[in-house]
Every structure is written in C-alpha cells, then in structure tokens.
Image (cartoon, rainbow, N blue to C red; front, side, top):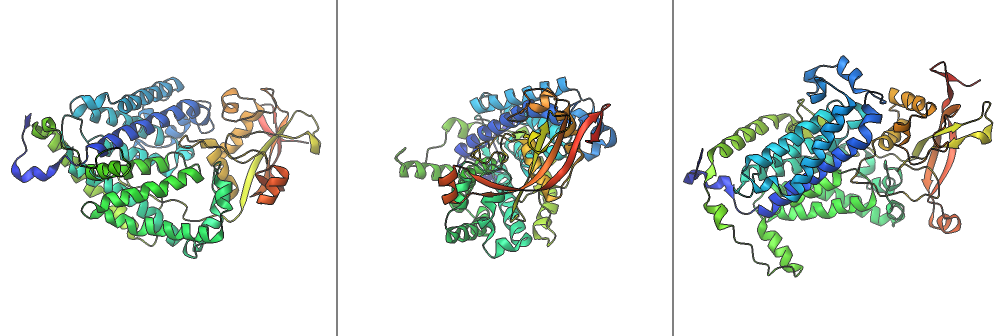
Length: 498
C-alpha cells in the first residue's frame, strides 16, 4: 500500500539527512558486527555451558519478563555461535549497503534481527554484559532500523528520536558527574582519571602528565559539553549540527585517552547523525572536498510515493517511544538519578551515565600460579591479562572499540564488587581450561595445570617522566596483601594450600 503524503504531512519526510542516515546505518552496522564478533570469542568461556556464569543456570532461576531472550527457550554453545555469526554477517551487510538498496522494510528487518539477537545476549549476559554501551547498542539499533532505505526520504521523527537518545546520553553523563563526586565539581577529577580508569590506553600516561591547569580546563569543558551543549539538540538547525560537531570532538579525545569499548564510537556515530546535509556540504567546502553547496535532494526519492505502511509503522513506534520516555526523563530530573538503567525489559528507552565517581588510587588484583607442591615466595608467577595493567614495562594497549569483558570485570574487584565468577575463574585456571586461558594474553605454564593459584592486591601508579626515562617502565606498584589465599584442587574442590 503506497501513496504520496498529504500536504499536512509534508514535515514527516526530510531530504536534509541523507548523509546522516548513511552514517547511522553503516556505523551501527559496523558496531553490531564488532559486538557479535566479540561474543564469538568471549561468550562461551564467560557465559556458556562451561562458563564462569553459565546461562542455563541463570535462565533456570529467572523469568522471561526479567529479560526476554532467544536463549530462554533453549541455550547451547552451538546455538550461541550460530546467533553470533548471524549478527556478524547481518552487520557486515549493512556496512556494505546491501539492505539499504531495497525497500524500506529490508533494512528494518535486518536491524530488528540484530536488535533481537543482541538483546538476547544482553538479557542473559549477567555481570559480563552489565555495561551502558550494551543497552545503548540495543536502543540505537531499534531507532536506526526505521530510518528507511535509499528508496524513501528520511522520516524526520526518527531524527528527533536520535537527538533525544543523544541528549539523554550526554546530559545523563554530565548530571551523574555533577551530582556524584566533588572531584567533578572542584575540577580535579581528571587529575586522577587517566591513571585510575578501567583500561588505560597507549596515550593515557601522556594525558595524565599534562599540566594541572589543562586537567581543570578538561573538566570545565566536560561540563559545558555535557550539561549545556545537549540543549542545542532541541533547537532548529544549525544548532543541532553544532552540538554534533562538539560531541565528535570531545568523544574523539576520549577515544585517544582511554579504552571504553564502543561507547565513544557509538556516541560519535549518533553525533554525526544529527548533522544535516547542508552542514556536511559546508564542512566539505571548508576542507576543500566539495564546493560547499548543499547537495540537491534526489529527484527520484523526492518524487517517489512514500509507502503508507512505512508512515504508520514509524508513527506507532514514535508514540511508543514517547510514552516510554517519561521515566527516563524523570530520572534525569531526579536527585537520585540512576546511571545506565533500563525501565522495561526490551531496553527501548534507557538512562545513561558514566563515571559518577572517580577513584583516587589504582588497586589491581593480579592472579598468580605455581607448579611447586610447597611453594615458596619465589615460586609464584603471574598470569598476563590482555589489557589490564600487569607487567610494569608494558605500555597500555589500544583495544577499543573491541570490548575485553574479563579485563573490565577485574577492575571492579578491588572496588568492592566481588562475584562468584572469580572463584570459578580460579578453578578454571587450576584445571588449565583452554577456552578460559584463551581469554588471557599469557599463560605462564603453557597449558599445564598449576598446583595452586592465588590473588594479590597491588597498588599501581604511573611512573613519573623521570622514572620512565630511567627505567623504561610505565607503572610502579607495591604489594598490599593477599586478596585470595592460595587454593588448589583437591578431589575436584577448591581447598586452601597447607
């Protein structure tokens, strides 16, 4: 069923956001492909049948309404692999533009499949999927699903929905900082953050050693970009485009100075998605890539009849999102603001935020093992994780937008967030479980079973520039105490060493 829109619905379709639609669709297609690729590499040892938090056990003690998921009907590692490969291939198809070449409902169905498959992972992922960027990927995927294809104009209401998501993402992060920690209010937060963030990047050491006045300027700039600039999204163009450019610049700095999975990249894609075609043309002219004139809308698309079904589906979705936005909006205004919260199980409209508090010191759990029956102080050797600090002379690596879930969870342990998963992790090391060992960068025993393992709490700090020149190290650390006394497998059970 198709027909041209009546005059009173002229506002519904826009020819000013063709570039934005392309960026949003292909950008989130790429992020979905990356997220599912990460599931292929990490989900089974973390959450599979023999994982640290097995999905079958979780599903058995929870209900469907707690978190709808494909895997509540049945979970097997084989089904997980099939679902993840589907996600990779569907995301890749969006990146190369295959679904967008068809009718509007083709990219819609592809993104809905991506949304449902990833929601299925998140809703059974427990601690290992309890991050704000998981929910962000779900919500953004649903919005991008209804931007249409190249055969129809962009529905303006979905661009407004993207702005509303970006507004909650940025303002939520700004408010949680302002309300949560005096270090953000007295402009000292970034004097600590580069050193104590979960997974520092290769330039975090350098950023930490920038002058104190620069760190205060960074915090002030953060408050401006997250508390003031988001309001520009509700004004006519070019103000939303200006806001989008500001967000791209600030998120780009975070990309350079840390590893926050795909959070910054998803925000950048959303920010580019609020920039209209005229601004893109102006930027192209400024960079010498075009003549600076706004591109003329495609005559074929502008004249093509808009399917009434598309209008109705988008309208119903917009009304649903409007109703579901009430609680997230109230959350922004609340003194007891919740960070990275969902208010319904399908994660359609959510609350966001990041780093409501900043740790002042960096404590790390290091895991050690031994082959000795009666180990002495020199018999313990350290397991190497892929990104979290370990060896003092190892420069922090760049891993984002890839997400190393085990390394992130290790950061939370010294902060008072213990989990039974860590006990299971120690057991898997004692068993020399190959899938678990593949989550690590270095197994000091080359696949052999250690006789015992233990966990040690260390305090880390960056070297000073002088210490770095003298030793070549990036870190200095001191041992505080044993976090977990030595344990061994005894008859299949964990026991303390004699």
